[in-house]
Length: 174
Image (cartoon, rainbow, N blue to C red; front, side):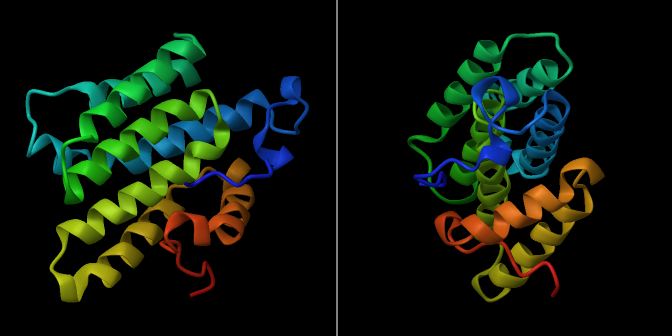
């Protein structure tokens, strides 16, 4: 489980009683899609004819651009996660990363799911002795792509939910 039992109001939209603006919600969705897209080839190498994870990323980006509804993106995210069901390892984690990115349109807090699963995918794809280092590099790569307007929110969210996300997020000061 990657979601906290208590919702952080900073990750809940204004219209639902939180403090997250639509602009920032869209930025989180685009960043989550970027994180998932970075590892998508790990899924596509195993299932080249299954476009559900890639479709989820296309749909969440379209949602962030105002081109499709939240339900279209959320549904695509669910289908991407279904693509992971019978897989193991890096391919499974990559599909879950895409699925988590797709559902950010519905619940912004899934942004960490996309990032965490992408890190898990990279770790799973690496040789055992290189897995931790590969995960740290991916975490750094992701942070380098954080939009300025949501950077501190995401870094704080990583600190708060790291234990729920398999402790994949390294200390941002390291």
